Image (cartoon, rainbow, N blue to C red):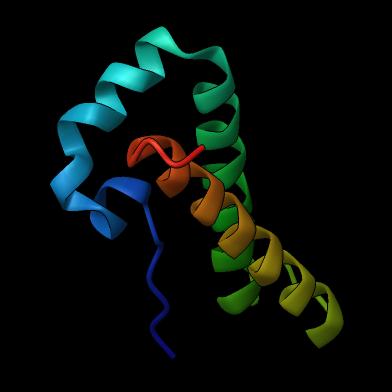
Length: 80
């Protein structure tokens, strides 16, 4: 099974410039951005059985990744 990463820039290409700007200027955004990418890497590794995990753990991380993505999008669109 081929599983893809979900980098934020690929998820929101229309916000590419704003993402780069906020990574440099907003510590809270940068922390959420880094956490999102760490969770995404972990989910990818679990999906590829590089780091085996239970279905419950995998689902919990996917929900957390989605929550982070929602928070990041809210900041990007000024709804935070």
